[in-house]
Length: 295
Ligand SMILES: [Fe+2]
Ligand SMILES: [Fe+2]
Image 1: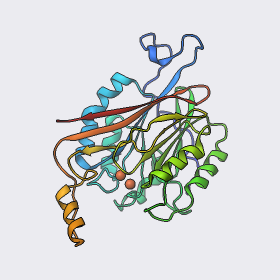
Image 2: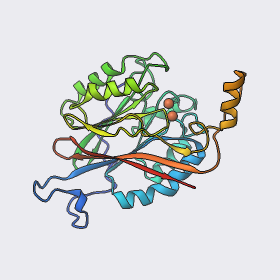
Image 3: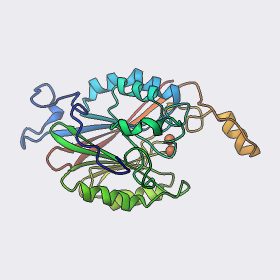
Image 4: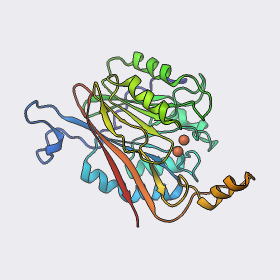
């Protein structure tokens, strides 16, 4: 399949937790309307081994406690802070992540382009040029609902890809009947993310920002039922610079000489958001920040 083509339905994806008919789960339904929510846990950029290990340690408990119907994570930094390989992807799947999104570091691990077409659970930015390996969105079935996950990348201070706004428009046109749509807007500029939120308000379930690794406190529901946050944050070492060794980053900024960056060590943090949507309309009902950190 080429860029932006549908990956088709994925029975098995998102069916790990079947929510219907469980009387022990008051959050799952509305006793008056009979409707159920679809709960999505979206985890911010996972950075290196510390990020992956923290996901391994924390995610199963979080899934048990919060009962998400679908777990999505941005894994553009999963291998040494740069890109994704098969081993890291398998590790994240084993930990409970069901869909992986990417960003500007998508191709840093060179082997990914060789196998990404065969893994419909991985989504790279949709606005890469036609012919780029992989897919810009994927469709899965969760709680009886079709859920579309889209990844786009901003252009301010990043590569000059195709227009991310028009890229999402084209995908939405193709999937007009899908009500649950989650967009990972991977961008450096806050303005570009806010603009994307407003551009898609009322047309998608959520616009969730990634890439800057620092969680923002502006989570809200935009008019029309679109959950929005400028940046979800990251899972990784909290005492580095965006997860990387701070001494190396500072040395680079002071000297402008070539410096080798590596993933920082030390206490880790876990940043995610939890979005609940109405299972019939796909409109977001709530967005909640999830934050954990070691001392
Ligand atoms: Fe990142
Ligand atoms: Fe990024």
